[in-house]
Length: 312
Image: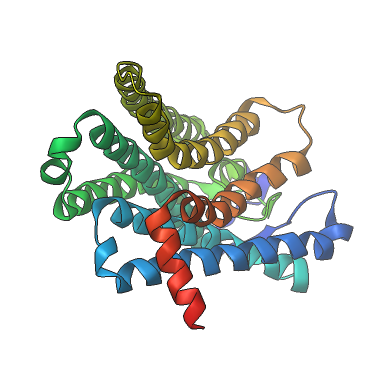
């Protein structure tokens, strides 16, 4: 045990190495990173501003869009500023507490993001399958309560992760081969039996993504059945259009996180820089594209954004 040169987790400092193998290209990589982040902030803040200002947009669907925008801002802000410090200033140090805090907020916001997508799928189900009762089933107050449940779920599920990490000591190697404190990357720095840590992280991924994707799949299965029962082609098209934006957002959100989680545990043959770049795309691309997709596909929102844009 002495050979590992154990240090207390309270006084240790980790080193975030950025993207291993691409250190020479960090400055160039920072250009799309910063561009995507700025576009993401502008798009999501604009959406939040327009919805807050327009009384006609104070509806369940737009309240859900605001929740999605907040989680998008949260995810990208947890990662990108520190990553840019690594790329621009080679500021790689992060305290253990800072690392665990980043990991907690990133994972909690990601789980909350998934919960919002589930609520949005339920919203589309009610809008298409039971439109006459939509206003009574999905009120703003009920959406807010569902969002609160999603937030509580996220906090309680993620909180054990940093607590389980704090119970063990870290080895002498404090270098994290990543741009941010990903859970499994931090677990690899522990000395001792990390079975509980690894299993808990994997269980969260399976339970959250499995449960949420099952609920989303069930909602869209019922939506598809309802659409097939409609004889009018025009009604078919209208029903499908109401789901297109959500399906695009869902695919962009779940595909990279599933790939990243599985390759980090089982894809040892995949180059580290490929995995890390894909992990960063998860917190960069969906937050940037989500407000654009909904802005384009939602006529009411598009018109209101255009109104404020013309005033400038």
